[in-house]
Image (tube, rainbow, N blue to C red):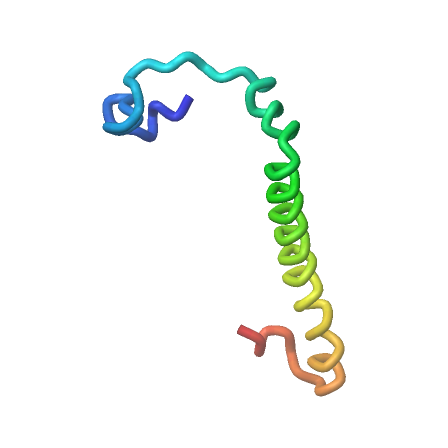
Length: 76
């Protein structure tokens, strides 16, 4: 799939040169493990938190900037 990115289509010295493609069900089977679900859920929650924060920061900065009469072009 990403052979265009890797030189000579080689995946590195630690992986076999030719591997069978993995089925989606193999990856989803990891969700059957409670510990993995907990870690994956925590990671998803953390990413959600970061995206929400970086969406809100510009919105929260607009009010003081407009009150001061500054131009938005003055913000780097």
